[in-house]
Amino acid sequence: MAPLNDTPAGALKIRVKRKIYPASGVRAEQPVLKDIAIDIEPRSFVVLTGPSGCGKSTLLNIIAGLDSEYEGEVALGGPDTRLGYIFQSPRLLPWRTVYENIALALPDGDARHGRIEDMLRQVGLEGFSSQYPERLSLGMQRRAALARGFITEPDVLLMDEPFVSLDDPTAQGLRELLIGLWNRRPTTVIFVTHDRAESVMLGTRILRMSGTNATIVQDETVRLSPSERTDRDKVLAEQRRIFRET
Ligand SMILES: Nc1ncnc2c1ncn2[C@@H]1O[C@H](COP(=O)(O)OP(=O)(O)O)[C@@H](O)[C@H]1O
Ligand SMILES: [Mg+2]
Image 1: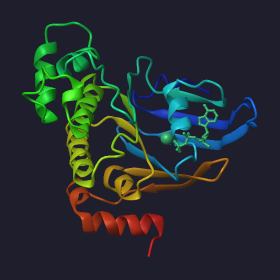
Image 2: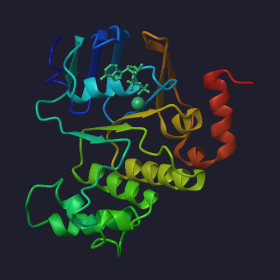
Image 3: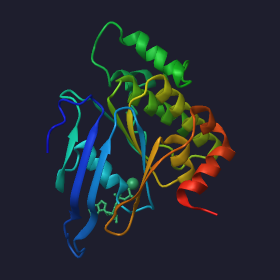
């Protein structure tokens, strides 16, 4: 497959013909993904959704280059594509302050301090820069993880259920924050969630996975304007349309 070098950074071409976890001990081999073909435009917000255990994280790890044990190919646009990954748990270093955790993502440089302070303000963590992560609430730790993900200005940002196990108002606040960050600096996002309302609120495009040996069963453009995304009724109506819920 062509490496997409002549296309803008942030484009992706994903082809996963087969992904099988090999047998280990008493466990039989497990086919997880098959016949997945996805082309992604730069600066689209793609949500990968489907039930727990269907293979979303497996696919994201393949896209990230963390798993190369599969049949197929993933091509990123642009030779120097910058990739970011925000995991399910915030993965902040406990012995570093909030500021240091974000600084670690950046190369040394003069403009660094101002950028970090500005990012901390954007995520509502001004005044917390010298705190250690364990002193922060779970929601604030996720804000720090978002700051660390966006500060490097990645061409492609992968997120794996970053808002799970939060109470609903906290999760909702983080979703609105993410929409704001993305509108200010649109980048290609691939966001994994099993939460349908969340997928509709965030995504410009929804890819639904299904099956035990999963593939993409639905590819849908979300018909919501930026301002409609924080309107619960609009989101619910669009959720019903896309997922054919009654
Ligand atoms: N390292 C692994 N070895 C064997 N099986 C795995 C491994 N990781 C995940 N699986 C299995 O692959 C399937 C898909 O897992 P996963 O990609 O984590 O799903 P999801 O993220 O959609 O919840 C699950 O049945 C899971 O048990
Ligand atoms: Mg997962």
